[in-house]
Length: 109
Image (cartoon, rainbow, N blue to C red; front, side):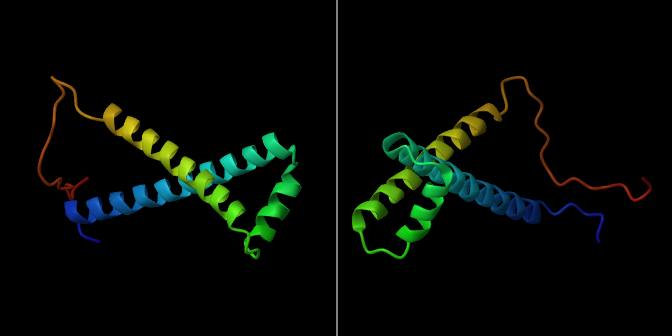
């Protein structure tokens, strides 16, 4: 492994790790919205929610697929709002120090 810090590789790694975080959090929040919706409307327990979701993938009923898609969209929108908020919180403020350029690791350390 080289002692040189590659900024492009770091940027690629950061992009794909954030993408995976976004997709997984969207999936979790979408499924939580779906489960909460089924629990509030039909008073279903977690086993009923899991079995009905599994059975829904094989059915041709478009209504339930649309409702699941809406729940997943809500999860993606909540995740997008969270990521935008975190991006705004992480920006540099006036007076903050900003270091540019490649970081080189000293071989003696």
